[in-house]
Length: 346
Image (cartoon, rainbow, N blue to C red):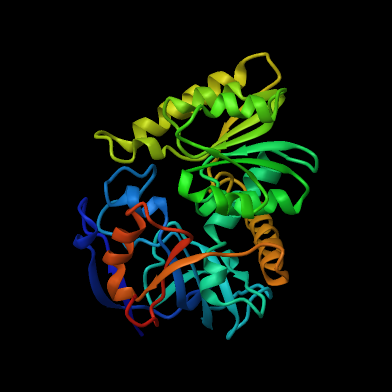
């Protein structure tokens, strides 16, 4: 069958994206043909189009870090956890910006009824990242106090909601205009332009149990100092270097090295650079099982109303360039979604 997909040909502006049509083969053993209903625009695509994403493929390639869609066909040798006609989600890293894709069936996670494709999409990358950092890396528990940088962002807002749903107190940094939104989620807002460390000391004199930092840069030292004894710093990005010249890989490696040094210090605190893909290559079955477990719990929390999703705007596939440009505008509240079947974005 023919598939329409968006191609990133080389380093360039969002307008350099190209639309192409190509033939897809029949799904082979262990594969599934999925009709894509929704894919997201993440920070990864913003870095990829600059050529600065760590471990990115060679140009040209199809962006799309995740997807939600319907299984249309299964190759031979399938497991029983997905079926033709079922709505599913998948982490892909690349390839999601298309109307049809071939993926490994083992990577698919069932999406329960009562959740739209766009709603589910907002929680694939963001939800898996938030859940795994909060519960698998930091091992936060009810009664803890944690600090979430960018509490109104895609991952940050899910982190806040998951933490509050588990009885964890949250201090959340955000811009002045987003303070009310952070407070509405049950967190204590702190203006990121002020003296964050001083304010956190007022709110948590003994330090916090965990800090979740997507900014990187020099601020990572402040995040470390705000930890309580036994606390955990989880770094999951280097947003501060997005517009800086030079290699994104070098920036990430410097950050990882700094965290490794911190983690080796004999002071009882911990520091980690979170990689959503860590463990998949060495332990693929365990990785898939854990991801399926985590996303299933997150989808159920959404379906039950325990957490909410926010969709900023939905773009059709042919307007992927506009979607990427809007995602980088600094005005987004929620998730920018690309839906192949959507009408023109408003």
